[in-house]
Length: 317
Image 1 (spheres, rainbow, N blue to C red):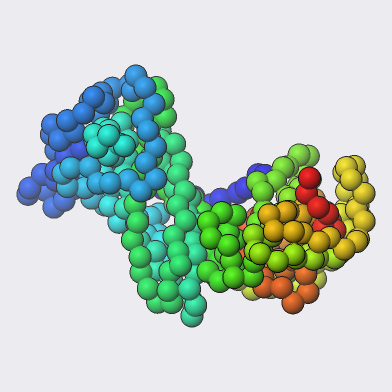
Image 2 (cartoon, helix red, strand yellow):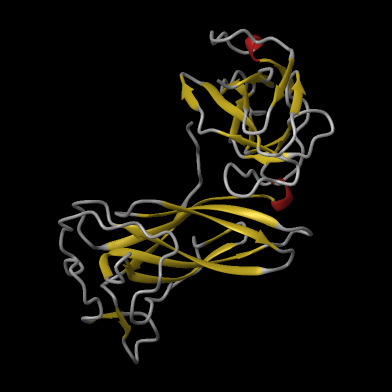
């Protein structure tokens, strides 16, 4: 599914795994032999693609400074340090990688879970999920990015591309321990073509008792400020687009433990007037009336159509 992010960058000159030169106000990085590994020296074309490291340990040496906070702060997330290099799974410093440290501050009155997308010119993008972050708390993390295969080192434009946050009590749980409700609700990556968007909604009974739903999930559209978007008509998907596939029939669906059900949302990104287009990143979903809500992030770009289609639940084969 196509997504649009407003990313801003700050130009950083990274010279290698090294230390900050004294007497320069933290503005330069002195390249030193601080990456004893089988990786090529910084600036050479990697012969093999380095291993991604999700929770990147710090490379040796002192981080290069972030010269300005301009473009490195967005929605409570701030990039704080950069290291030219990353520690791989064998404990070696990969000079062809980049390690970024950041912090997340939650201003909300309840715990939030954040999904952050980072980018750096010449490097593969990376995302991190942080949470739960308690109200008023600040947590810190780091992420590693590998240089695109064949790219040479040089000035690096680092960006926070997107920050999305949902109440931790409503965060989707496609894996891990079963939620207290006994069911999981989550979205897939979806598909987009010619202005038509389709995203699957999945319901899994991960509990110990049968779980029955009937009809369509209850939906609430939420904007980037976490305010409910009103005035959108929620309709059967066939009234938005004819997609074919199984009949969209409302009937009771009982899931035994381990079984799944499938629904889906459909919309068009059609703009028919100047102004009034709806862009709302979040969708609060209840599997049925009275069920605990789950907040998903399908990045709804509804244009000016004012309509969102939803399928009835059916058992997933």
